[in-house]
Length: 65
Image 1 (cartoon, helix red, strand yellow):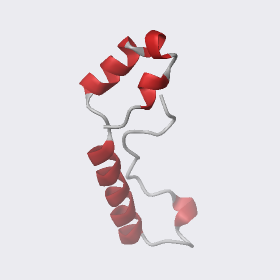
Image 2 (cartoon, rainbow, N blue to C red; image 1 turned 30 degrees about the horizontal axis):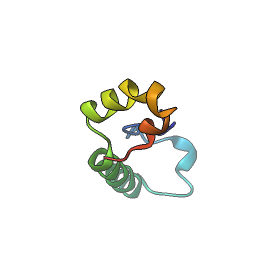
Image 3 (tube, helix red, strand yellow; image 1 turned 60 degrees about the vertical axis):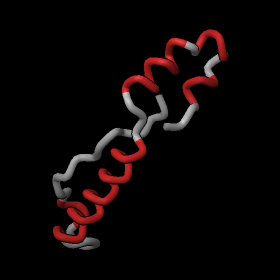
């Protein structure tokens, strides 16, 4: 819906080697995934958003958790 993934891949891209170390990368990605998971809406909120989408002209999809 919003273009944000619900989790990000933890694999370490070699292109980042000169900029960030593996352990730091893992820590950052884990923290980002934890924050996204804690704020990700539950399945019921998504279903209700889609259900009321025609009635609210799409505004129901913007309801936060």
